[in-house]
Image 1: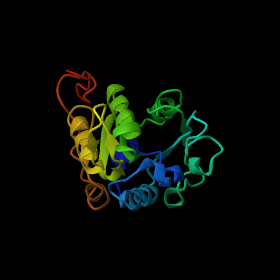
Image 2: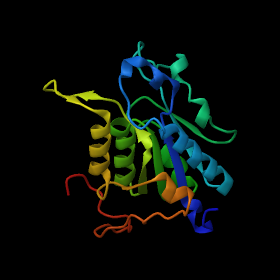
Image 3: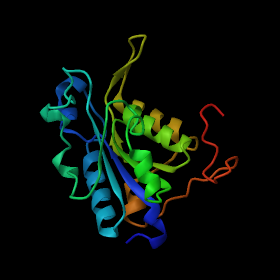
Length: 208
């Protein structure tokens, strides 16, 4: 069970939706991500810790994640339980145009553990903004995943490398990157602290 002092730690599950099964997204890495997120969710529930589910509702009518499409539904493996907030968004950050920050602050939550899809888009954007807003931020490396990408020069980038470099860019600047096991087995998270911030969270300004 979690340390009682960790009651201010929230699990944030970003965009684990059925629409990401659509073949149009292409090849994906980390197929076990949903199982790891489910394990974290079970752990959070047993420990009485707060969870927030993020649901993306695309404004593009032909998107698998568009409102009203079956793909906009959260996957069964991490289906929200009664009383667990579902935050709906239409941009990459779970903080923009939503009440997520308000909910966190109202409940005295100062630390977020971020999981979900996709590593380089909504997970990364949410983590960066969480860090900039002053939250102690963790991203769980094996509870996130992404897809192959094509760069502006037409070069193909495999999902594994996109995932890896996205986490590299986050770690130590916006968040601490950790694993599922470090949470579920020992609740051993190396509290992300660095000098330069009056609130002790660290200097998380981009490009410092």
